[in-house]
Image (cartoon, rainbow, N blue to C red):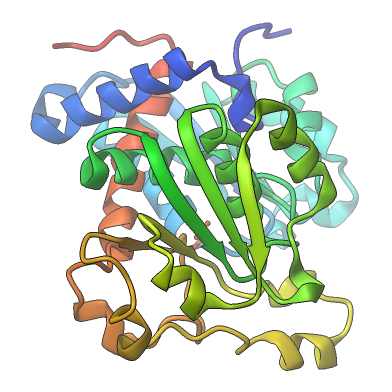
Length: 310
Ligand code: CP
C-alpha cells in the first residue's frame, strides 16, 4: 500500500511545503515549456462524482501540459459505482492504472477514505461541504501575485460560510500565515461553522462576524473573498431561495472599498457579483482561474516526487 503523501486538507502540508509549491508554480508560469515533458508516461485519474468546470479541467490540462495523460469520468453513472462498487474498491482498482488520483465527491470524508485504499497519491478536489484544498492553493497563488506576500492582510469572506468548502479550507490555511485578520460576512443562517472557529481561535486569529457587507468594505479590507450560496447543500429549497441573493456585490458597493482591495471568488458565480464588477481592475476572479491550473501542475509534480527543472 502506498504510504506517501496525499492532499486531503491544507493542513496536510506545512507552510514551508506550501511555499515550495507556490514557488514551483511561479517557475512554471515563467517558463511553461520547460515542464512540458516532466510527467511523460504518467497517468492522472480524475474521478468526479459531482459537477465541476474549473477543478476538473484545470487538473486535466495541468497533467496534459506536463506531458502526462488523463483518464476518468465526470458522470459516475458511467462507472461501476452504478453497479454498487464502493469508493474503497474503486480507489484500489483505479490506482492499479493511474499514478495519481483526483477525486471530488458530495460526501464529506470520501477523499480521505479513498486515500487509505489507493496505491498512489490521492488529491481531494472537494468533499461535500468540508474542504477544497486545491482551491486554497489557487487562492494563495493569487494572493501572492497581487499582494506579494501572504501576511498583514485583512480578509473579508462573504456569503455561504456554513457550506462553502473553499472558505473552510482557505480560512484554516490562511490562519497559519503571519498577521491575518478575518471579517466573516454572512446571514445568521450561514455563519462560519464552530469547528472552523475552534481551529483558528487557539492560533490567536482576530475575527469579527457581521451581515453588513457595505460596512466591512468601508472598514478597509485588503481582500474580499465572495462565495455563492451552495444550493446543492440545502435541505430546503425555500430556505435557499430566501438566502441566495442576500449579498450582491455591485459597482456602487465597490466604490466603498480600498483602491487596492482585490475581489476573489472560487467560482462558479450565480448572482452574488454583478457582471458590471468584472471590468473593475480589482476583480481578479478570472485570473484566479488561470493560477489554478499552474498551481495544480506544481502540486502534481510535488506529489509524484518530480523535482523542479530550474
Ligand atoms: N472553484 C471550483 O471548485 O469550481 P468548479 O466547481 O467548477 O470545479
